[in-house]
Image: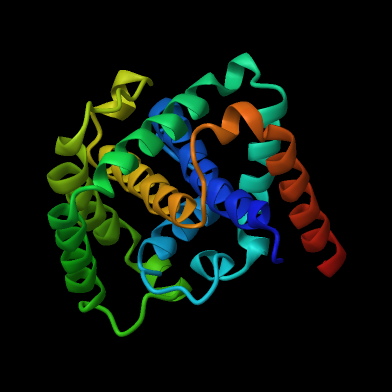
Length: 215
């Protein structure tokens, strides 16, 4: 996996996979539990050895890889919200990366949260998902959101007014930001959406083929 675009596709898939959760939560009050918990775990992978280590292997971003291909090849109307949240967080992240003070504060808050648990593993996240959601949402509200124009979340009012749903939406957006940081780190940039779509899609498909062959 030495191809630059494999790394770009992995990080973009992680961001897309978190972005999927926002309209799910805003429109139904619930979301895919597995993908949501994966987004939470990725936030605590602050010193990964490899790109896919952020997600504990490419198998955990299969949905994200499929989504990246769909978004870049078709851009269907029903995916407009996902595209908006994805590009919104990529825009916020570009400003966040220029703000070392904010990055340090995020790192401190994540360390403080992780220090409350023996280990941030599957069981910990599953058992403490509500507490983690509120804590992580606080990072987004206090540090990330003030940096740029706020992302307007569209959905049903009865869900958008629910405090736990609000917390989960902000946590999902923070998950997007975490993957967007990775995306920039491995060489991602917004011009690639115009000029390198086919390369990214090809890399994403190759990664999907690897996942399917391993199953």
